[in-house]
Image (tube, rainbow, N blue to C red; front, side):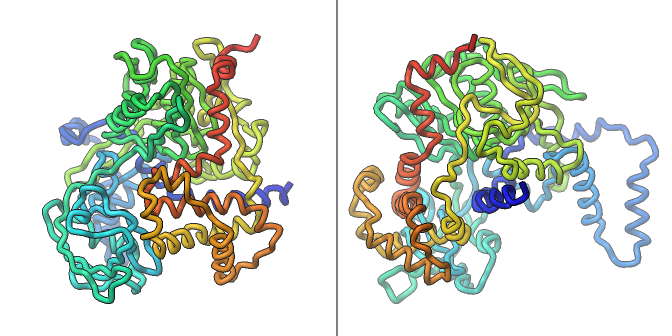
Length: 552
């Protein structure tokens, strides 16, 4: 048993490491911010402090009597963090210094120079200047290395990504001087960039996956998500969309209102989407209110273990109303609603004020009675228990059962259990693959290849032509294997050959992303995605109706 768990840990470690940043999303972006910051002073003035204030007395005593000097501000902030951490896993304190960074992605924009970049050998390498952004306007190109910012060298000196971002970002209208190195030139190019508001998109890609099936992938639910979806949907409709796959895998959530607005596009007026209720908050019901864009045609929602909050609201609404099929793996299980209140010094509190419930009445919040650490430990324990490989390993099936409108059985107690379970694909993931994945060698090689061959790759002209025409030849694959050896990883032919298919697929996808963006990346990966295959199979008319019917 222990050996089995160690084996699973080895298998899933690359995925856990690759997605661990999603926990930041779950703690940050997935928090449903339900209250604006206006009028928040009144909220605090309404609280009576006529009783003995033990906490303030203790803080004063510590500040005035502690053996070493101590910052009162630091002491106060740490006390607030401890309070909130002991309430539930999703109530958080946001320092004033972090407030803008945590809220900008949800509001759909930030202010800066407008580039997508990666750190390569301690150097900022521009992947793409954002279209229409300030960097593109002055002539920054994909592949440029930013060597200096305002005359200060930032390349090759092990400066943290956060420090570099801090130097490049800034208020709209301010200027920043950058010096860039460009392949093929021996001199640096100097640019003065005027920072501006940069859009932050929640839609990764929208394209026709076959002649009648549209595919839309969302990475978060921000203030702009609904409009982004409508724009993409209308374009796909003109291209022949009759069926839809909405991919919410890896989507940690966001604004509750955005999830409700999007759900309204799939449900008929009057159908229940979600309701919320808390000890000090009355029950609030959200029903579909208008004729949506896509109320009757076949719909599939894709989920995985990193889908949370707003993603689960949509999946729960679709599932409980028997409106479409949910395919993939059990979602994270975040059923708590946060309300954000900004404090006078610019900091803020996101406090859990209610639980949300799906139309059948189920709460899908995972238990947190034993504290935050155990809450997240339970999530990672799912990997070790084999839940991602077998439906029978999912403990959720032993919890409370609820009934959909048509009488299908669904489950509460920690996440949305899909209608069709698709196990994690372990077939190609050998120990060799795990090694190169853990070290980021596939991405690093793809980046270097794209960088060296940018002019040749640009000749394809479009992402679509690249997807259909570019091949990972034997020569490219052999070059990659040599790169792996240079990085001191032993190459055993049998294991390398077993993983060759997934390696070639990812090499092509990452090379394409570095040249053509997500329009090349996802169409390549999706060709070998078992969850996509299952979705396309389920959307066949006879299969779709069968899955939505109640077994007698």
